[in-house]
Image (tube, rainbow, N blue to C red; front, side, top):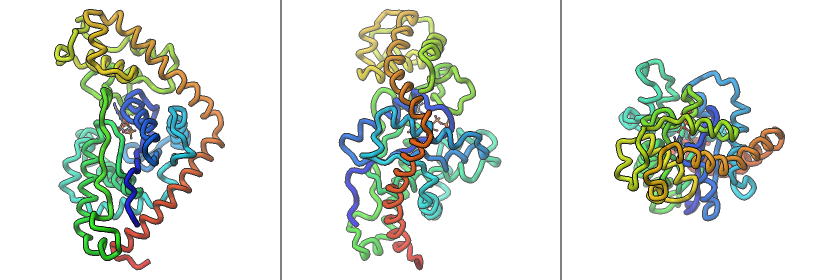
Length: 345
Ligand code: AQP
């Protein structure tokens, strides 16, 4: 079977409220890529149990992420939107990739070190092998492009390493099965670009904005009201200096740099343009402008998300339909992968 040349896959974990970082770093790119690519967008619920085993609201949060996809402009009819646990082949390929990936590769993953913290011995094995499941998510669909935020860069490199090792180790069988000279799995291209590939916490410019950060004031959620958005931006940590007229002078001012990056991304302009416009202005002027812009861009998504969330049956229908179409691709891949491994059946 020929490899697709233009297939996008990406996923979001249902681990809490979607925030501005997820939106600017990932979901907005998902929307843009629909124009030129065949897209598969997944709520990666199997990943959600790697950190906290017992989840209270998994079904609801899964629907909420899917609703955010659709409310942001993803078309679930022309493309595929589904949740990972409905397509069992993700887990099967992840097991095989546990055997392809090397211990040393996983031991280098910085996200595991950050998430496991000082108590790595007590972290789940799933958290350690998370990148193998992520590689399986992507390669199950032989996706060629993966739009993600900057924090996922290292995991994407691992996905490429897994694909390359599989293609190399099974080269003879892959060729004999007629899959061509380039190997079976594509060497996926990460799409990490724009001014908001790493949106930082509103309370601490050295930490990334994150769903699992305990302080809700650290992030703007897609479900926040206009008042909440304005309050969070007003209270965002900054320094006492005015905005400079060039980006170089923002260096060493992480909170200011973050707010400028957010403004630029929301307004689809470069950060240079933002500092040129607000040069010499205090945050007392810049923050209300940013709040107004954020509300203008996020309010329509928020309204649409609420509407979708009121109709659970509709959301479940979208996910079931997406899963059926994803499964067709996944089953074909696994048939071929099982044969390459040499399994009977
Ligand atoms: N702060 C961020 N800036 C830009 N992009 C971001 N992403 C996450 N945080 C930022 C991107 O959003 C997509 C979905 O991420 P995820 O939910 O699968 O997991 P994550 O990267 O671990 O995100 P969180 O919000 O920090 O979740 P928790 O707290 O549960 O770990 C990815 O493309 C990611 O790069």
